[in-house]
Image 1: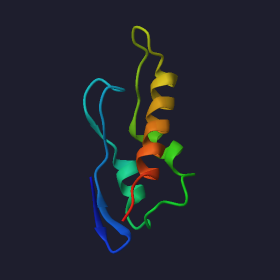
Image 2: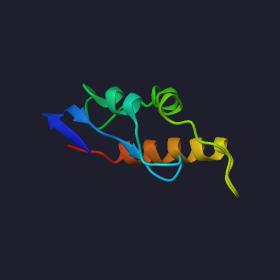
Image 3: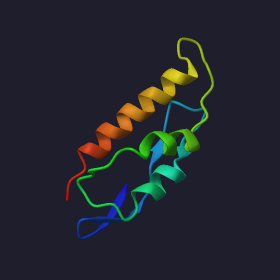
Length: 84
């Protein structure tokens, strides 16, 4: 969820489901979006922010590294489609 002020993100809340044991508010990703203009031009900060927010563990059929990779790809895709 994002609140805009013009073309800039004024507030945001990003939550991850399924890659960790319970729904998790992604504080670093949410904070990283604040002040950014849409559509986003710079995604370099996303990987570090996701790793700061999520600490998945291996589970049957899914390695923790795969979960982080999927979270990163899906986050980039979702943010890429955000428009004013």
